[in-house]
Length: 247
Picture 1 (cartoon, rainbow, N blue to C red):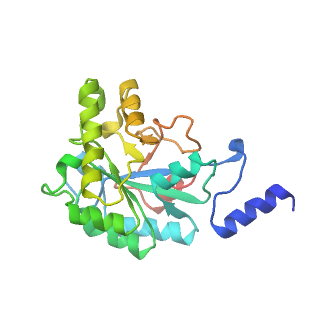
Picture 2: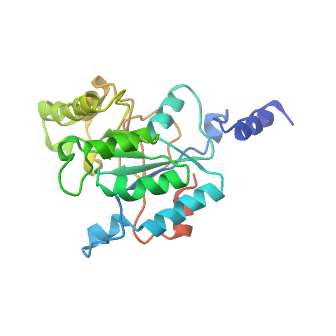
Picture 3: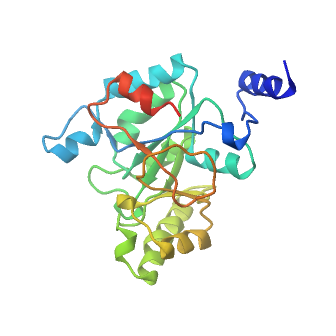
């Protein structure tokens, strides 16, 4: 076994980043959820955004059975920034801060020893059907990442520079005020929309990576503020999920 193969085997055994050359690195899929709930809306959009608990559990079971570990978006970004390349990993992200993140998704994540990244709009915390601060702290205490999804879920490209600074910055400041040891590292764009002003704003806030709704796999931070995600839909069975969770 040559040195490169030995290093790869050692990394896999220890569960650390494999030192594969960039051109050989398969990357990490970042999966996008919204709601995990037994109540499925009748409208087409709401239905598509809702994954039932039994289906979500089957997905977590698949990851465990196939040796795919979950890491947070922050862990992925920080590893890539250090020149590491996480192997056999996936990131589970949950947008919009619905309360079923705590009541339904979190117990299942704990059951399977998994973690997620929850992108929450600070202005909706404590409002009906959304997370409150106690629930958000429970997510963080369980090892998951809580990160910003704007203040009022505004499409940033519809705002001027001052509006973007408020929409993104107020979210970061609010989380810093209410969450112990909170550090803004990643961001998810509402509606997946961003522009040059957005990128400059996030960079000033200390965000090192931001996620769009473009499909793809994260391999590097070359385009750190345009990172892709793969959407998980209501009708995705285990086979469809397996394809999305594979680089």
